Image 1 (cartoon, rainbow, N blue to C red):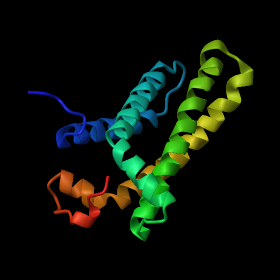
Image 2 (cartoon, rainbow, N blue to C red; image 1 turned 120 degrees about the vertical axis):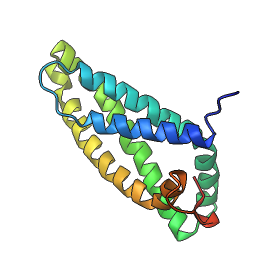
Image 3 (cartoon, rainbow, N blue to C red; image 1 turned 180 degrees about the vertical axis):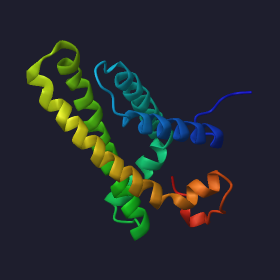
Length: 154
């Protein structure tokens, strides 16, 4: 049996693990930041896999958006998805840059830690919007609701 990232099961597993690691990344830690570093690395890995799984959708919808051919619902999903890419990308980069402050005591890097916290919270708000936008699809994946063919994008 061959494993494929594009299978329904792989998509569900990646999304569940991404959600778990995201939730764990917001756990407050005092002192040793190792837990947050490990969880952040896992979260980054699952975000990257999620994007890899949906890269064809992103490419296709980007072309449609540039051509002005997206319906209103899909356009808002696309806008939120692009904002998620930008905000979580910034959160990941600032998190990596903040390591210098937490590990090496470099005060000049402390601003990255604060920026990381802000982008993570904005990213969390966007994730809530994203989940709400895809609630029908999530329900269908979990066998809770049937999905309409028009909702099956991404």
